[in-house]
Length: 99
Image 1 (cartoon, rainbow, N blue to C red):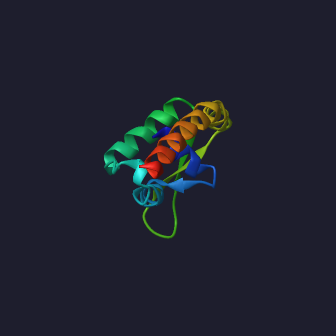
Image 2 (spheres, rainbow, N blue to C red; image 1 turned 90 degrees about the horizontal axis):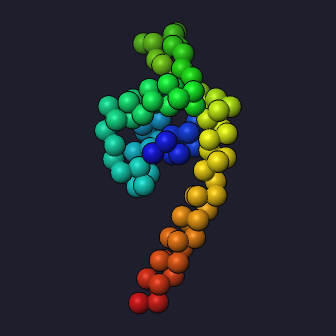
């Protein structure tokens, strides 16, 4: 789940609700409830992978999350395992097409 969240934050800072909206359309997200997303964001912040700040003005205050250099480095470290996972999924899809 952290990969999905950090991947979206690579596009730029987002507040929690914006992030939730983007993730809800992703079938791989698995329909995590909002509380689960905010727990994950707190864990990512405690790990130093994201930082947050309050955005005020233009409506109610919102906590905005931004990926850190440590978060980017962690994502880079996940590239090889993700590529291996993708290869396995591609193999399964190929077998399904043959059925």
